[in-house]
Image (cartoon, rainbow, N blue to C red; front, side, top):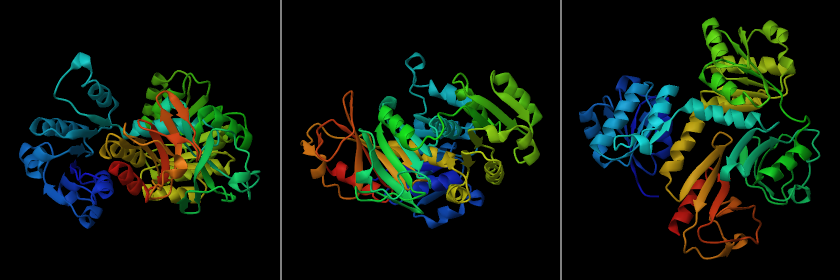
Length: 449
């Protein structure tokens, strides 16, 4: 992998996570204030420049003229925007700007539009809450799924399901399971470990199984093995902030019955103005009596998306106690995700993970990118565009240097769910599932070719 010079403006938790992901293979410089510096940055081999990333002298000191990528991820939208635009003016890095304000996302997004053509623009605008909302929406709309990712314009998908105690799949070897054509099991999480299975792998209770395949075939699979109820009808959202509002807007018009529980009365009034179909309830999602009064147990899905991890966990556990079958919970700390699921939360989602996918997809190159991560980053879905001169090869003869499964082959407008005898050829786009440990090895293998 080509060593890149990456400048990160923001010595906070987000900046530290980004730096931790890329520092081993790249030249990283972090700009920020020493007094606010995240402790984990001190453990990394990187350069640190004291100051404000919107200051020209500070940017020059950080080496922005020679930078490949400039990422602004402070808590201030305005600082991030000014820093990115200034970095673009001094050098010519790819600029990535974190924003929290929807209006900024919308206005910055048109900067490269032909109608508003300008050389003074931001390349990639990252609104973490929007990415999180999109992820929750995908999961809600597929009953019982723990994770959902769409590929090839929605014609292919990744779905993750938990094997429940009464499932007919328990104690069955994969080779003996009558899964629909054009579906593959590409990964299994058992306990804390994610692994690539073989046909001899025996499925066990509580396994989280990751499938890839054509969307229609996965719908058939879901109906046959995982859906005890026809489909999702009633959704309760606890927390009427940006994510709760945007999620409710996305659900409007899709025949879902949606209610939002929001503690702040003024915010409730605003939500009522913005939403035409959702029921707005002024109250505390941790109030057991309120949850009972509002028949929360009738909900097919409860989504807790306040800004507080502890409150989200409590709301989720109360919903579970009242009999809600499926609970999706927002976490701000990635380390909490596994803990939440251990104590009963069905799905935990994070803005950090969603944002990192966006950044990784660019940094790993134009022909090799990351479409998604699963299981809090334990697994990765890679997209590999084979060069035009790639020699025709059967998948069984591909000899990947580390464990991974080619789950989808996109050949022009055709989507192929391959087997070992499927032949891949130049200009095919491969979608490969692998573990995060093996992903760099597989990326390097294809870059070498």
